[in-house]
Image (cartoon, rainbow, N blue to C red):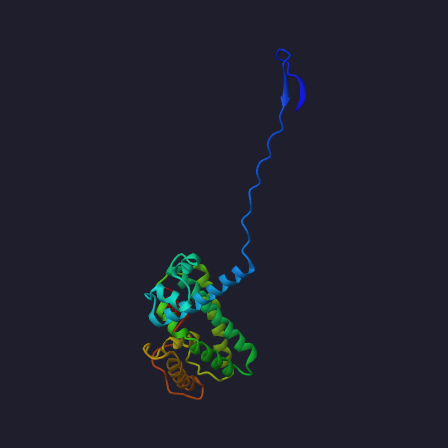
Length: 236
């Protein structure tokens, strides 16, 4: 110990004692690469299973069925999502973004506007999107991200429709909202096996594509659906 001399009070000497070093707070261990890989794989499995289950059974589908198809425990789902509402919102955003990418890729890669429109519709119907959106629409609050992704999809489909019309390939009395709504009309009975449902939906789509082509001139009843009407149907 080191003598520091008088402190001025009766000549008393004081001694400075080195203060004890504060213990270092340990940092939480970083998850191993394998754990991160497992977590990503579990999330992908949950989202894929949830998309299938909600598309087949609607919003009231039990979370236990989603967990069973994903091969995880129900607790795994609730560790990633606060509840069914958050899971549905995540799925709808992901599915909307996927459809937007399909539309943009079709525009960029197909040789003509009609091929691009037909490719987009075949991919969208083949993915089961027509069953998923009606099953979930109106069941959860619409977030800003959901609205933004929906607007981007509307723009992409609008470009497909505008180019097909400009090329004289799509009948003039059909709107982009008509095209989007048409997918939800291709709903084979849910009791059929999944491959058979896709086959039936594909057959009906080809019939509809023939009717959409500009070469067909039978007048359509009513007026084209608008995007505002479509958003009210799917997002309200």
